[in-house]
Length: 185
Image 1 (cartoon, rainbow, N blue to C red):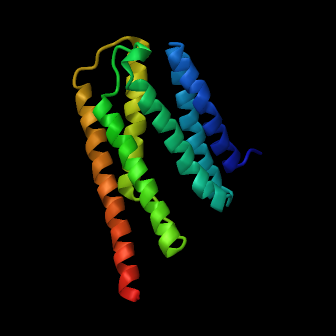
Image 2 (cartoon, rainbow, N blue to C red; image 1 turned 30 degrees about the vertical axis):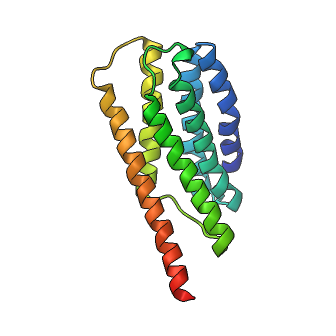
């Protein structure tokens, strides 16, 4: 039987294939790989919970695999040079990546200065990831089917606002931890 961590690693392996397929304008294949990556994401979580396969490495690898896929997708699908009819707005890509960079830097600083701390995903973070994945899926489907979807900008705005809200929530959690730590001294 395949383990949850093996599925997570498989999701990471899908990323270069996804990038290649988009760059070669094989959008059906790119869409299939993206959906397959989504299925492995669902399955690895299910297997980890159902069969007691939650591991420290899995706790790190799963969000890393999500971020790898999302970052590659946002960068790629926001480039007009790729030749897509509908692209992710650059302002959204900058916001998504900027939030993640800020969070990673904050987590590294907290862990280096205060010792190891885990930051489990919040409901805002999970909702943001889901909407970001749906945003990528929406752009892939619209381009693959060569259709126009009125109001697509509202999906981009939703992803933008959730990204900002979850980023602020995570930063508030980090500041609360730092504040609490300093009160103990």
